[in-house]
Length: 228
Image (cartoon, rainbow, N blue to C red; front, side, top):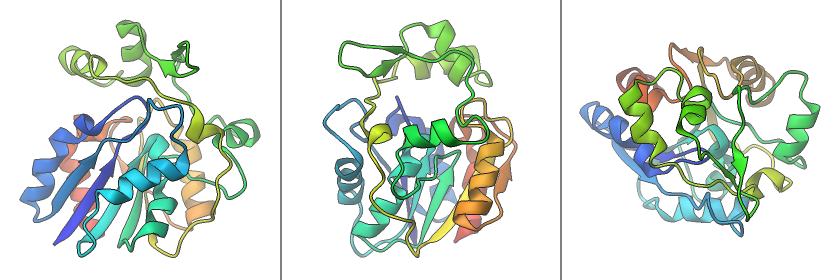
């Protein structure tokens, strides 16, 4: 049996994977959703990868799925324990010696494309305080009810992992890129280019927005199951 370790993106938590767990189990897989320290200004790339790896049972065959911002820690998790594959789901792909801020400045196309950015708090973290803006920027394809449910669970996002220079290159583990064609947060064009040029793979396209675990859980479970 393969276990999927599910790493959430910015502002979110393990809760965002709830609708994917059962579809994966129905397809014969285990699944564990990890709460990452996204609101901790002291937690950088290594600390985040340590926490993710600590959830993984040593004897399990593991596929690690990183959504959005968590793409940055995927190679570091693979450096801490053997994994069967790394799945970049609408995710940033790190560059050794570059921070994500460097990538934002140097990319030939926009990487993040939501229409209204979040605000900042007193600790320098980004936060979504206005529900209407959060829905427009993050959840344009969610129902009113689902967008409200998600908004109430959002957390502050510390900038630490985006400012740190990435310490290592991509590991030997198999890489898979899942690109959502209607992603309004991470530019699908950038994701397709990163898949080809950095991961050396053809991206797998999903007919969904940035949060397929919420809007297309069965299609996402099918795509993940096909990996193994």
